[in-house]
Length: 141
Image (cartoon, rainbow, N blue to C red; front, side, top):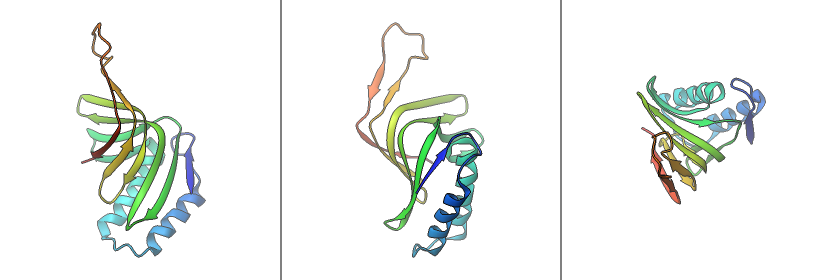
């Protein structure tokens, strides 16, 4: 299933409902906090593109028009993202991983990704400072 977020707050409620049904009828043993986290994910992602939010000053989000595929597989709950800019915001600092693709494991709060680019162009430097990423994993917490 793919839910395309055209604008914050606009998505296919029938696809989200189908995903929730798959979660609630799966054989995955979920705790009450997991159900709350899944519902909060829906609210945070479809309103603000937030994948993970720990506090009001620390979060991971995707930028732009995000096609997302949600699935229940391998004993976990996944959000697949293709060619997105991933942003980490913490207090007064931020990091952008441009043009990356991967899978966010909602239960483990990990993003398994491939490719992307990080640059430090916001710092006034005459040098072009950037890193090109291969496969990587982010513990979102």
